Length: 455
Length: 131
Image 1: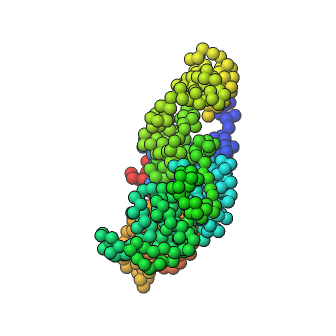
Image 2 (image 1 turned 30 degrees about the vertical axis):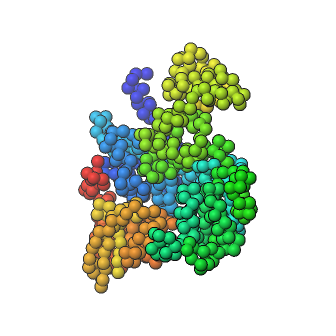
Image 3 (image 1 turned 90 degrees about the horizontal axis):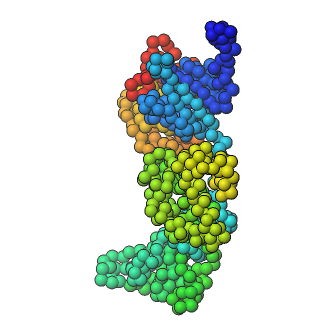
C-alpha cells in the first residue's frame, strides 16, 4: 500500500477525538482564545450538570464557577508561564450550585506554527475521595486532636461523657502531648462551652504572683495594689478553669485551691469578703504527683479532689502510628496559614520522621513541620527541609535502638543503603539496580525484605 | 434599600463567595441613586452574609452561590436573586423594572446585556481580555 493510500485508510479508520474523550473517566474540555468552551466531554457533563449543548460557546467560568476562576485561572497561568499545571485541587459549583472538589490539569493548545489557539483542561472528581477522608478523619479526630492510636481512641470515647458531667479532671502527660488541647476539647463539649475557659500555667509564675493572679486582690492589699483586681477564678465563674502544671503549685496556694474545690469559695488577697464561684476545674501535670505527695510537696487531700477523672496522655513515642496522620494534619494547617500547597513528605523524609524520638512530643513534630514549610519551595518536603536534630539523629543511635529491638545492625545498614540509592535515582528501579550492580529482581526482593514500598 | 452585586470585569461575577469587589447600589423610588464599591476582606465564605447584612444590604444579585451560603444569606433575611448572567447595568435596570427573577436552572438563554454568543464580541477575561 502506498503512503497516500495508507493515510486515507487510517483517516477513515481513525476514531474521532470526541468519541475517545467520551470514554475517558476524567472530564475534558477545551477553550478558544476568548475562553469560550469549544469541546466538552461526557464526564464533564456528568460532573458539572451542564449539557454539551449548554456549555459549548459559553465562557468557561460561567460553566465551572471555580474558586480560582476570577483570581488565578489555571489555564491563564499555564499560558502565561508556558508550563502545564497538574493536579491542582479546586472546587467548582455544579448546575445545582453544589460545591464539587476536583483536581485539574491545564495546558495550552498550539497550532502547527506554535501559536496559542486555546487551552485544554482535564479534571477528576474528588467527591468520593474527599468524603472518605472526612469520614476517616472524623473517627480519628476530637476537636483539634488527631489520633488512631488505641489508647487515644479510648480517651476519645469517654470524653463526651466526662465533658457533660462537669467533674474535675486531672490530665497526666509529658510536655507537648496535648494536655491543653484536651482541656479545650472537654470545655467545648461541656454545657459550659459558652462561658469562659480560663488557662493558668502554675509553673510560669512565682508563688506570690500566682496567688494574686488566681484569687485577685483588693486595693491596699499590698504596696502596688492601687485598685481592686479580680482573680482568674472570678473571671472563670460559670465556666472552666484549666490549671496547667498543677504540681508546681506552692503548698499555700494548694490550700486555697482545695477550698475552692470543696466549698466553692475563696477570699481575694487583702480581703475578708468571701466570694462564691461555680467553676469546673481541669488540672494537668507532667510530674509524678504520687512522688511529690511522698516527698510532702503535694497535698494528699488536694490530689484526691483533683483526681476524680484521671486521663493519661501517651507520649508521641507511644503513638508512632499517629505520625503520618499528624504530619498530614500539620501540612493542612500550615498550608492554610502560609497559603502554600505542600502535598506530602518524601518516603525518606517520612522514614526519618518515624525514627526520631521526639523528646518534645507532638509540639516538637509541629515545629519540625513548621520549619520544613519555611524551606520547602514546591509540593514535597525533603530531608533537606528538616531541622538538624532530626537528620543528625545518628546512625549509631538508630542502630543501637533497632538492635535492641532485635534487628541486626548489618540489616539496618543495607536498608539505609537501598533507600539512599533509590532516592538518588528518583526511585527508578532500573537505574538503582544498575548502580548497585544487581538485577532488578534481586532489588525487588531486597526491597520486599526490608519493607520498602517506594511510594 | 441597598442592593449588592459581585462584579467581575463589568459583569455579574460567576461566583459570589470568590469575589472581592461588590458594587453596592442605593435604590430609592425606582432610581439607582448612589453607587459605591465595596471591597470584601478575606472571610470564611459563610461569614459573607453577616458582613453584607452589617452594611445594610437587603438584596444580593449574583451568578453562582454555594448552597450553604445561599441558606445562610436567606437566614439573615437577605433576598438572593441568583443564577444571573449579564452586564451590571443591564441587570440593575432589569431589577428596577421588576423583571429580574431567580434563574435556579442557570439557563443561559436568560442573559442581560450583550450575550457572549453574539458575533463580534471580543471581550475576554483576565488582565489583557482574551488570550
